[in-house]
Length: 406
Image (cartoon, rainbow, N blue to C red; front, side, top):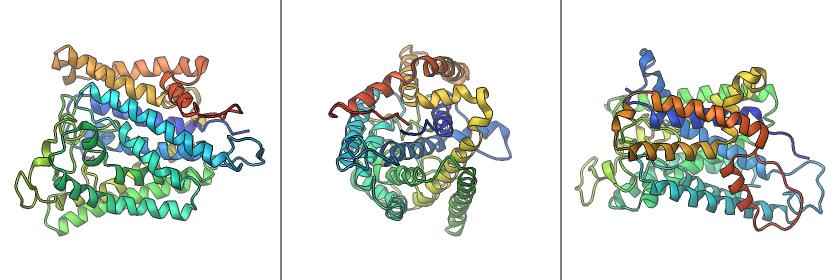
């Protein structure tokens, strides 16, 4: 029998989704500055997306790991001869379902670049590594985080005229597949740890703090050594330019450049070149701005995500009822994520852009998500989209025991 859900994982996922809501629906805000409390809301920009992807990788491990004292006759058990095939098929079908859902959300044509298509691509790419050695998975993750930004920068130069929103999003946007695959793989490795032990929580917290300091601090030092301004945004560090963001202000579900159908700032030549053949934005590979997609930015954001996950695991049970709404949102993360994009599209359809100058819409969605998700989780269980994706992923299974989702 599988252990119960990790409350801390639900809490971290809930924080990630609510961070997306704040980043996308909230009013414009300046870049994050420790010395200015009025900018602290910008902490959700970009970092919520990384936390969301990290939790996805952890969930992949929890859904597909072997069970102790398993029944070899159970085909849904990954330690059984047929088990790994079953789980790989489930992940593949789940990825297809997420890609379709992400495509439907993209059709709404909001300034939010939907992360789900990139999610789907990362899930498919992770299938061969589901049962790989931890050292192998960690090595591939490191390689993706280091080489991914370079591949993306070159790809933006070669494919600068791409107009398809899905191609632009998965390959060129704020969530390029190679780089974000590394984030998911880090989650895959973290999910193999004994996440119910306090010692592991403290180690994750220390690792997160260290990664944050090395990532953000290292990026600033490198830029200073190269004579670049520390806060310089680049073509790679795109953000939503819809009415709800400012600067780099997009988290979670993401935003890139301009409208997903518009290559936007990726057409701006960097370091020479022309509009027809823009140069590669090498300077952007050192940026630490949200959604820069550089190795320093991703390492720093991963550090924040690991720290948040560790603190969530430490406090989830102790906080009890106080954090129950956030945990419920995390358990219904896909539904809440999709709902906030639908709300964005509905508000934009009114033709009144003034809703984005204040916090009313954001607070209504955040509070409403908690008020709906809490009783839903308690009395009904799995969210509607979660249930749909889960049933779809099991649609090719034969009869047999069903495991709990994570």
